[in-house]
Length: 162
Image (cartoon, rainbow, N blue to C red):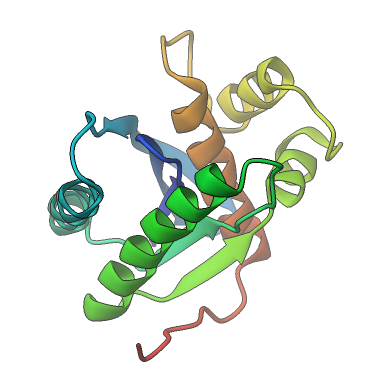
């Protein structure tokens, strides 16, 4: 099964794609959608287009999305929530089941501790997926950790009817 991990942000959305076969995990792809400053509606529309292109290319059987954590900056939290809304709607339209995981769940799953830093998460992800050194943004590494967490904790995904 192909699993898509997504780390929503305001202008950068990390994605990680892995394949689970039995108990083994295999790295397929990762990256970041960088959506340049434009109107809010245009940003969300671009996110949908980029996500649909990725879905069509890899045809995931499961998506795992980082849940929203509350920050002090309400404006940022609202923008991330809007991006998550577009992501969840796009997944529902494509009939892709999804799971939600917290940042601490993903960190704990891959590194053993929910308070792990970015470098520890990156090292753990690379070790688990047998990736040699590769230059990648933290958003993409986080998305891979999210995908791994979904692969390990997979039960039955939710398809919301929005």
